[in-house]
Amino acid sequence: MRIFITGGSGTIGRRLVLDRLSRRHEVIAITRSRSRFMKAMLPEVAEYSDSLEVIEANPMIPGPWQQKVDGCDAVINLAGAGVLDRRWTDSYRQLLRESRIDTTYQIVRAIEGARSRPGILLNASAIGFYGDREDRELDEGDQVGEGFLADLCNQWESQAWRAEPLTRVICMRFGMILDREGGALPRMLKIFKLGLGGRLASGRQHVSWIVWQDLLAMIDMFLRNDQIRGPVNVVSPHAVTNRVFTKALASQLRRPALFPAPALALKLALGGGSEVVLASQNVKPALMEKQSFKWLAPSIDRALRLVMDDGVGERSTFGERLIVLDIDTISPGEPLLRRLLRRANEHEVRIVLSTSMGPEGARQFLLQSRIECQVIAADGAVIMKRDPSSLIVLSELTMKIQSDLMSSITVSKQPVVVTFEDKFGKEHVVTAPGKMDPIPDCIRCKVTGDPKMLEQVLKFIGDTLWKPGHVLVNRDRPGRLDIVGPRSERCIAVQTLARKWGVPRPSIDSIVSNTRALGLARWCGTSIALSGAASEVQAECDVQTEESGIEGVAEAVDMLL
Image (cartoon, rainbow, N blue to C red):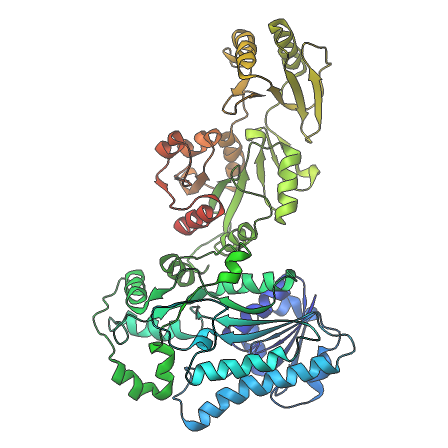
């Protein structure tokens, strides 16, 4: 994908450029100062120099830069002077308008003049569009409010909508972006770290916010999902009052918050800019919730922990920590899972997945989720990645054991279905009573049928194979027995990887939900049970998440990192 970006010099612009380059996209970035842009981006962009073109130009006026829009797949316009960078004098109000409205006008002109037009225009806007609405919940269907910011955002968006006949247009109404590197948060941190923080005015005004990681993930969804168009609230699902935000930030920094800033003092200090911090905007991301977007940080406490520690801790070598994630209750293809793996990588923490799925099921999970990492599959029988050549077999059912199994099942005279699975996930099925030759590289035998019939099968298997320890039997699923080799334990597979990577046991954590991961919960240094996990799993774990599914995984990863 070839992407044209204005506003690439800003904090979010720089992060977006790096995010797109890391996905192997081509980026054309417009900036007023090429040297300042490159100084801010190096050394991170050095490895992507062939995919990045930086053009020095003023996007508020027409110029040769507009020709670069031709042939691009997407245009992302983030340009605009910072609303809190200066006091709002008459001249700065004019700059706030021109840097947004004039730039958007010129971008639409460039799209109109392109022979090969982009498929989408992503244009920045802000929740200031709604004005001060006190406690009222607001979504994308609400009308424009009153005040300078509302009028500015309305005119800004109006210029972007001019491109609608030519391309798909999304106006991204940003809430307060939480980013330690820029925006409002660094200003707050300076004050709070000195112990001088406090609520603003009454503290009852609502703050709608989003962490920069979720913002980039939303932009990625906008680029990929051609069903999304129109205005979109780019915020978390849970707005908070300024009083709650202040308390959460003070708690995160372990500082008091005893010095409120009166409204009059803010108006004197910021002029019209006080509108930004005093307006109450309880904004809901209705469209993104309809799209089932998964937030990395849906709560303000998790958000502040995330942005205050985004991968820059003191660590010596990669892989000194390991998190084992039980994926048996997670659907494949979850975008949030990719983002969690990326976040762990930023912290130099390895992630290993574990599952009761066989090798082929695990491989399909990796492909559908578009991730690459080690998977402990078939309850510990194999360790694998996407590439079949990387397969490590830890436990097999020998030819003799397979023959003994079939003999025992045949003697039981129960009409069940027997499936032998090899290390590549290929299945060999026979209906018992019947005859089947043993297969090479067999890692698991699945017996399915009526639960009462399976109990009879288990009696015949028990004395000769199960009780002597020649096989392990998992019978937690109604109507199915999973029979594996004696060393098919997830914790044994984890120990194999830990020795290979030099990770000590206290540095290995697990996130579990399935009863088959009980061994992991007992063995790992710290274990977290997802909400809704079986009671025996919860009993073995150190803590339980409030959320279930992928949201619970995000909560658990946040705890561990």
